Amino acid sequence: MKTASNPRFLRELQELVAFPSISTDPQFAPAVRACATWLARHLRAIGLGGVRVFETPRHPIVYAEKRVSEALPTLLIYGHYDVQPVAPAAAWTVPPFGGLIRDNRLYGRGASDDKGQFFTHIKALEIMLKSGRQLPLNVKLLLEGEEEIGSPNLGAFIRQHRRLLHADCAVLSDTNLLSADQPALTFGLRGSFSAELEVRGPRAELHSGIFGGAVLNPLQALCTLLAGLHNPHGRITLPGFYDNVQPITPAERTYANHHAPSDAQLLHEAGVGQGWGETGYSLYERTTLRPSLSITGLSGGYEGAGTKSIIPPAARAKLSFRLAPGQNPHAVEQQLRAYLARHAPPQVQATLTAQLHAPPYQLAPSHPAMRAAARAYAVGFGRPPVLQRSGGTIPVAVLLEEALGLKTVLMGFGLPDDRKHGPDEFLYLPNFWRGIQTSLAFMREVGRSLRCVTPQTIHSRSPRAKATVES
Image (tube, rainbow, N blue to C red):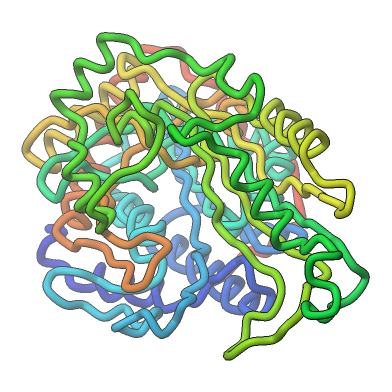
């Protein structure tokens, strides 16, 4: 079967992208469930077994497997089928869930993050299963519907189903290539700490003419607190914040100077003319090896058309820390709380609600599965990958290591400018086909390279859990 001549794969991907599986908004819960049901039936149709839809307190988890032999290694493939909201909807020039194809691009929310990327592995498995030849390894699939909201139920699921998910290594595809023609193998991710800061003042709205100058405005207090989190040179001011940040080695800096995207390239991808941030570091270093703090949301007071002369009772900000190797998200939370305790004015009440803790992650390029991935990219793309770090965070990589002892290969097929989380998100289709070829090669290479390592025992029985078996 030749992937490039199989338009059915593309039609199926369009069907998958058409589900508005937005996990953060309860009104889309039926669409998230419908997407899980579609995936389960599709996995069964291509020849996978043990297909189950596991219930969680919020959105389902889809599982499938193909067990060949206890003498072969086992690969766990992870993906997430939930997507970000489309807002602002008016900024889209194509239907967000229409699956429109134009100029070798498939448009739609989730086309790249992450439906199109994990679907490459599903199609590679279909090719293998329908070839009539034995798979070179055992395969398990874990597809979740809550990644975009921090995977609140995945940890409990993994710990409860350790035997079911037992494997030798894992792979996920939710990262980027260096460019459309140059593959890249990601070996490090920044960690994350996300929180919401609320500042409350008066019990109700106050007339700004009568009380302005006499009552501290929560918006003003919030802005002062936020402004104090950075110094004029782009460094975060929390005491102790940089104490455990690992320094950049000369070898890594030299490699990055030759292979990482340039400042000009990153500015072009961002669509801005000038950079900002911690002095003394390239933009690539700032976004991958150094920590950052972004204010991702700010609200309070009157936000309608025209004016309204009031002092609001409360103001809120959403904060996103990205953490460098060596940092601990729980320690950062305590540093932020200590800052607020020292600097919040007595006229207001500042409350911090933590939402996500995810440590940094890295996997040595010398790991056998990473070497297998490098060889697979050379097959699928015709050239070896460059090694790169990512400024993003994928909590499941740390979770799989902590709960199952698994190392996760970060094998991405997205582009730096494919508008993940933004309007007009797209998947570049030539790399969809190359991704399938790369996945085929990766499974063959992993089957060979890990066979010399004593495989973990593959249990014929796994603990039962509440599950729906799709027919």
